Amino acid sequence: MVIHRFVMPLLALALLSAPGRGMLLAQATAQDNRALQRRAESLRGEQRLSEARDVYRNLVDRDPHDYENRFWLAKLEGWTGHLASAESLYVDLLAERPEDYDSRIGLADVLIWSGRYEAAQAHLERLDRAYPGNAEVLARLDRVRAIRHEPPRARWQMGVEYYGDQLTGAAPSNGGTASIAARPSDALRWSAAAIVQQKFSQTEARAGGELGHRLGRSFELHGAAYVAPSAEVLPRQTYGFGLSTKLGAGLVLYADYTFLDFLDAQVHQISPRLELYAGPHWFFSGRYGYASTRFDGLTDAVGNHAGAVSVGYFYGVSNSIQVFGGAGGEAFALPSRDAIGGFTAHTVGIGWRQFLTPWLGLTASYSHQNRSDGAKQDSYGLGLVRRW
Image: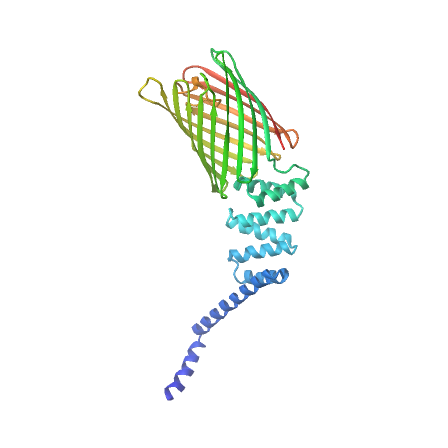
């Protein structure tokens, strides 16, 4: 008992010393923060938004680096009408984590509530490119377009295109394509096309389609099949499949394989491609292609490498212009028997899309190619697009 009377006062004195007081204060602060956190979450769940906002303000003042508390403060500032404060908080959050989906959606809501529909649309279109088919993004984008008297995202699209090319020493080639595409759901898309081509005194038809299925937010599987029975210039059968995935920061990676079965040759192609969307207007693309061609009657296959880069600019809602260049054994046109296995080339070109109304648009393209066999080829196309 005597020891107890002496030890307890000494222990109390130790705890009240500077290190002891610091430890007690830290424990009290942590307990207080946990209590405030529980209070904030409870008020948020009870929809007592103004009170919850004030508690989150207190929590952020205590720890300005806590991302989750700053996010919920931004949410509550927006929900209670403090839009300038909410926008500032979201901007700071996205500066720290540029690809945070929830903060990007939150900023879109604040821009809409502020009546800044042009900025909201540009922000949502960037988000749509990062998360194509996302229901939350598309619902907001359709709402903004309706407010701005623009059509919602089209579910159907139909197109017709004329194209031609002129190869040194040969008669001009002409052709046409009719296509239809649909997106019956946010996860599924398909297209079908019929093609007629007149080349080297041959008139041939080709038909087929493509199918894409989105797996979650970041992946899409796609496949294609085309047939041209009895063709001599076009491939008689074409099959392909691939995968695309978003890598973050506006980057999209594509990896594709294609098989082309010509009258007297079989071609296997692989073509990875990387796209970068930089801001609301610019996009860049780089693609590598390798083709292995085996001609009937020959033992060894012919291998060709090709590469291409392009730079594009979006303007308006759906309009774009794109320039590209490439080198290697690739024709940058419809697959054709004369364009496989036997040459390399340098190609430059331009593509343009302009919607005259929200539903009706024009497309145009041109490319010039210098081949290693001394020939030159000019290819061109003009199309009409109707969507609804």
